[in-house]
Picture 1 (tube, chains in turn yellow, orange):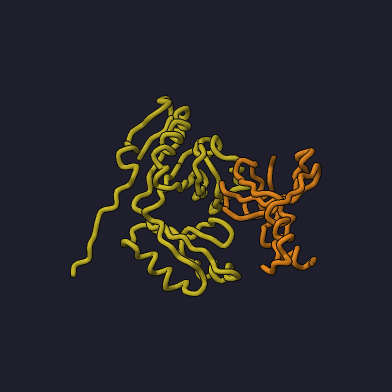
Picture 2: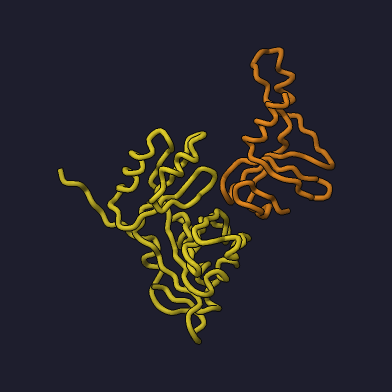
Length: 183
Length: 94
């Protein structure tokens, strides 16, 4: 039997069109990229196994997503590959579920990325309070988001797939005053 | 109101869903003689003016159940602990 394969389509494929938008003078304030396709796996530690699970996730791109919970991310992995790997690795320690089809990750890079995000969330994004690698769960424009600082001027925002289009409209509107580009 | 979530730090009240008074204790028996206690647990609530401890779900954040202690009169928030720690402390007291 041949293994069935299918192409994953980003829900923002026809929405996040490339180009430069908003204020058109000077350098762009923020660049948007839709990270696609991604492997996204939720790991929730069993009672009392938080520290052991965190230790077992060393070496993975594991982002804090609640008390004893993580989103583990990977690029360029086959369908379900990361899920199967973690499931085998964390047996007995944590519950593992594949969210790759359920969430969309938008990356913001640029000198005004923080200013754009600050319009939507009460989370303190100053580097002293929100250093590289830190994640927060919050809401922007009434949409629940998982926000991670991935670099000095870059952030990942992960939202549910079904909210991604309206979230995209909102966040690009916030970026218009700074000028933005979609890559 | 700003609520100090033990997992997320200080967040605005809009991110939380309140369930109600955390004081009632669930009876541990189904014995018919406990019906009065069940009635109290299910239906009767105080409506205090002043300090209260309430269950709150951080629905717009880490999705943890918390117990927030606050003052209904002044809106002052004294603190928040996880519901797990709250019931452990309650059991230790009992």
